[in-house]
Image (cartoon, rainbow, N blue to C red; front, side, top):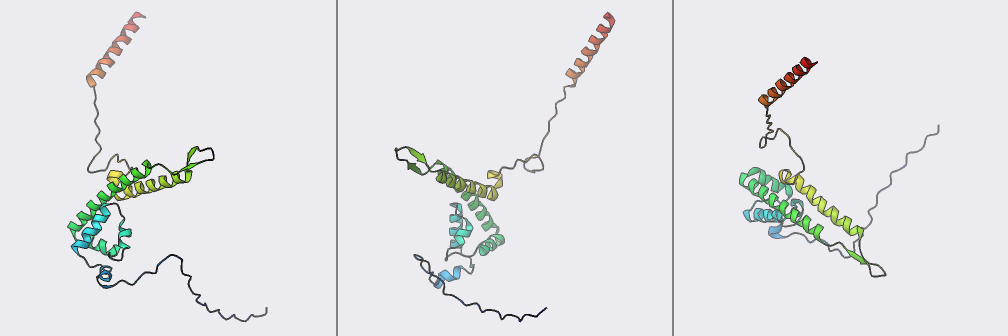
Length: 193
């Protein structure tokens, strides 16, 4: 078999990146705003984060703001301080309630209406499907974040707060009387035969 010469690798050439129309390049962060991305704790910053969470805004979205710390920094704060953990849990619970109200508002809003040539009003099925997906996604998130309140799991046993209780009523006197009556009737039938 003839040997083939090894090909020289091609150099990747960097092509100029296309700039999207209508988008503005991010400006560098200045001063105190840059310090917040380091995760430095301040009570005011924590309260702002908890306020936004209680309004139903996800932590990931909050932490994308340039003035906010990273998600990991927030979880480090919460993990290191029990009072912050309680505030975070309460904010998350209030946020779930806000998301429940938002889901209800999404489903209560009238879908996009279109009119045909005759002037008949019809609803856009895509709009209906889109709103249904939005509401269902919020409900699924709420079930993950607060399963006791919004989850669908039904516990039959093993739950320390609601242990399974079984009550058995045995009416032995009634049962014994029925057995005795049945035996007496059998004896009378046997005597008459």
